[in-house]
Image (cartoon, rainbow, N blue to C red; front, side, top):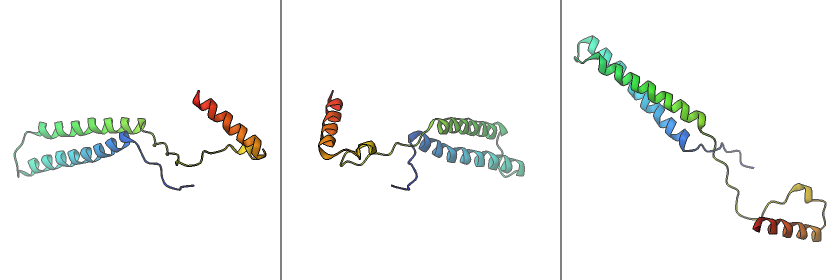
Length: 108
């Protein structure tokens, strides 16, 4: 059995990207405000506030997407079909009959 962590779906990947966008927007808003207060640049503080609010909105969207994301289902390897463990006590002729019966049920 594989001990690998399950891969996450597209929603989780999108929310992970939005996390870094939110972080960049927060750093931008804080640095613009700090540079304005220091007198290095002169901007309207409403711009920094809008950037911060947009970052918060994206962060909320990322949280919601993460809540709805589920791990991807592992793919079954192609090969022999799995036989249920309850069939282990059956002899070979009964096993063939059970496999044939399940195959006809699947075809229907």
